[in-house]
Length: 149
Image 1 (cartoon, rainbow, N blue to C red):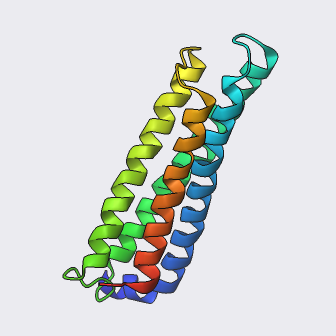
Image 2 (image 1 turned 180 degrees about the vertical axis):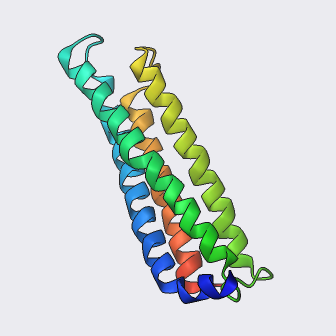
Image 3 (image 1 turned 135 degrees about the vertical axis):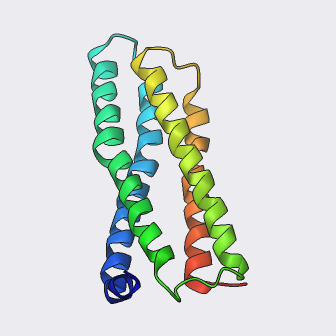
């Protein structure tokens, strides 16, 4: 099995990067939809349209992309010689990934609140929340690209 992982390393890495880009695109777009959804009157055509867009984005893109990110990332972690587990950068990356996954869960919860017409948060809240995946993404990319420690 380890030979297969090593032989497929470049392809696995490519599919991991594609999955991450897809996941991040959705994670950056969904909070922006929430910003605009806040101003839509409950029950309006606009509000119902946002609900459809948010559900399709989460279920059709964000969730599958996260799943594939974990699958391909797990395969990369399992490839012999790829990770030096004594290095600090991998742990910072994994903690950031854990936080990103938690934010994904928050997005899911907020979407369900909008679906049920029970949103209690402001557009400003979602504007600030939109910065969280960006910050985590920057940390993760710096850790992986530079392996600073």
